[in-house]
Image 1: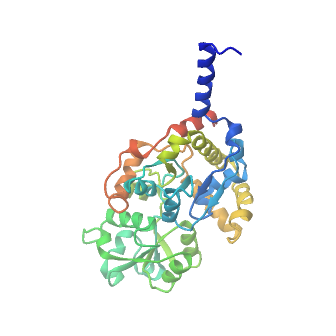
Image 2: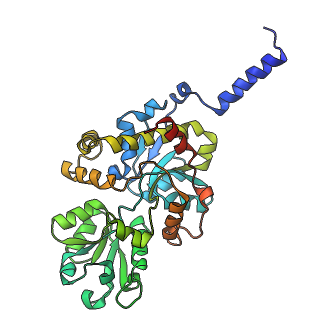
Image 3: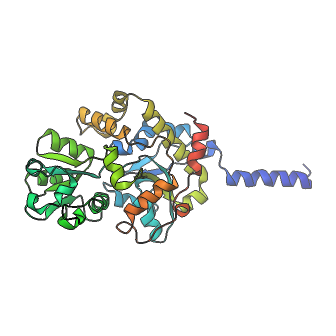
Length: 354
């Protein structure tokens, strides 16, 4: 075969295109590693995408999940290159960026923080501590209120401090100045401490709120499902839980990034349309068999009220979030354009129109 100039340019052009854009059949030979902190419904997009085989539909093998048991550990796993994609608290990619390795938010799965609920022990509620503001009333509490987050510096602490700073005690000072923050640990110690009176209040994920109220030892005094209460403190939606990735992965493997976003976006749309029982049937046995079925059903119904169905992170919502993250999570503001890449979600939306 004679290699004319046109034939050479055509062949090399095709080769260059192949380097830039990997075809689906080539992607199928690759696997991706994906991380989230715990396999509960707050990270249902990962779980549904795997069980419904949306990853395979996008031309990649079903991923291995890395589940280290804490959001900060997820960020460490991603920063170290042990996971390619992560789903977790939006301040984590910002922390990775602040430490010198740029990370990008690819999408948001919710619009409110599900662990910004404040639950007070029943005895104090009965005495009149029926609001966050009353938690700062020394006459009602008898001393500085002891408030537990899972750990000092954790997401529950960051959002809890913001709530308590944003509301005023009867003396006009922020409620946060009237409390003592302590580390409460995980489910058993958080709920046990509230029940025993060791803590006056806890920052609670929905499951803890359900347990405290149903068992009669705690009552919610700040509930994120109350849109009015949420907006009074936070001023509108916030991208709380996000899919994120290292910027270098976006630059070196854009097709894998697109495949990941497509699969999780399709999972979010499936969750939106599916019946609650259908979701529980899909996820209970493989991921949540230590929980009662009715508790998972409650969780599904709860998160459906705060999930972000279009996956978009608006600049205004990001600015709302930055007010929370600064300075407890990050030391300096990180511009939206540096932290967020919505191009992959837009392509997913165009391909899988509702």
